[in-house]
Image 1 (cartoon, rainbow, N blue to C red):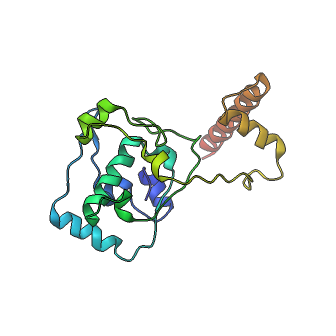
Image 2 (spheres, one colour; image 1 turned 90 degrees about the horizontal axis):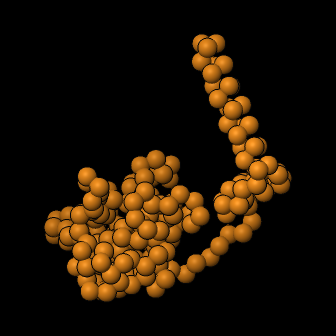
Length: 187
């Protein structure tokens, strides 16, 4: 599963909201948690029956509230008080990439106010901290062999842009725009 349609399509899955029927945002507000009907729970349980692991891709775009909704939904579906319904979940992604569109990153504790208003609970817990064993991949295979590009991307990732990096990025954007315009006018 993944937080966006494109990411879900790219991994041959569904969005996290669709598969687990998580509350969605409407007019700038996300509904509070509600338990699914027994039929819906049964349908999802059958879908997940033979899965050994649930993979959540692009985890940086999952909010801490959606993580809580996922936990609660799996708890209800599988009838257990264990984290995530006692299912194995592998979270994949770069936590320094795109953050959730609305909400706080998955690794941040949910505010007590949000927990009370959306989850109906008294106290917040940092689900990520409580449940996730974190391993970081440190070898960058994608930019291997292009040290200049790697350093430039790394500076963007950490928000430490030099004037030289900014100028290089601007020149690349300009070249891409010119190339695209040339293709359009040639057609």
